[in-house]
Image 1 (cartoon, helix red, strand yellow):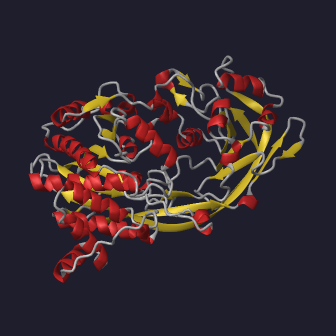
Image 2 (image 1 turned 120 degrees about the vertical axis):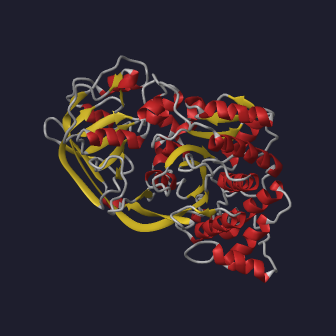
Image 3 (image 1 turned 135 degrees about the vertical axis):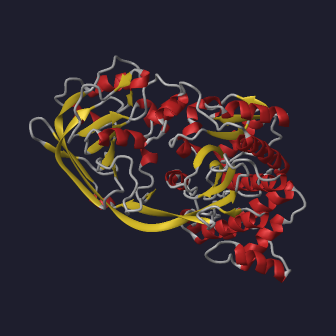
Length: 556
């Protein structure tokens, strides 16, 4: 998997790029040389090939957030942007440092017990009967004999005629709910309401102090218990506010536990309805049982070891030329990070470097090519930011931090065009445009496809809820109309996609030995450029379509 390390022999070029890779410190000469090598390649296909080869090289060790491999990749992207003539876009610097904190649960500290209506306390066994996921907001927590309440799915969706919190009081209680969401939503809305972080927020906003999630038959099939407990020493990461607080969606909820299906019935002892009736309703085989107080009390405890660190977003600026529109910003995003090393495979003497060629060196290469097109064609009316974000693999964190703290002064973010893992293994004839139908970006996108001779295809995998699973969604949550394109399933694309997803996704084999069609990626980059360019030059900024769920939900 290792590739030739690009170098320039011209010392003058090396020195020039090294001196300007960042405002803080020059990029190492070998990184500056590699960036110049890609910069001077003869055409888009060669530039893209060079970018992916460098970013997905073994030397980057999988570009995990917070590692030297990621830092080197960030220096490389900054050097590439500087070489094209972009300006530093993070308040005069190339890097926006994202303050992060990671937490690893202390397994021996996890405890959960259920006190029955007659006062008998039953201690459950960690990993066998339950898993506790402590909030990263504190290093330790304890809940002692708290009242519990069942609240269906824990979904508050009055716009859809569904509210599990209607008529119930959860303050000071542990909420008990089923994972997932009722079968009343379209797939994208369902993915939104299915979010664990949203459920924690809804519970926290109403004063709940803890949560217990129960598995439905379908969710247990998707994530069997054995898989859930396979990595008991997992870590979680979030970004920190300026006052040092970790960002948590539900700060009052001290922890969420998942209880094994074999033990769930004890939570319903003495309750108005049985666990079996509640499960049947959740599985769609019985009538809704509503929300009700449980007769048991819950005790729960846990702890985390926390570590502070930081990792940069890379931000390049193309200033707009129109005096009235230049303070409106179109943001092109792609995540630069990947998942790093698989230490277990390395210990076994196997290849354990998750190179992340398709995920997401392809996306970074594509936005770099889009940036070059902007510079070659002249600056647009609106300002454009080229944003390579960190920590996508840890929960869209770099994008979320930027969306909360955009480096645009008093400007306004008006659109986001996101590139994430375009699977470029076939000559694509169509594209999937997540989010296009939700705002006035849709017609712009359709015009761009007509210009480039590519068809628009409907979402072929709606059950995956892709719209809520990539960096653009963090901009959507801030009220910014956004679009995210994938190559479509036509002309053999479906077979190629599923083969990649099942065989190479988040595995060491996602490297440049795959038959990546670099010319096709250049074509895909061109489509994204044409869309972004049209948005940046349009007389009016994008707006959400009237009545769109996400537009109304996140309206600012």
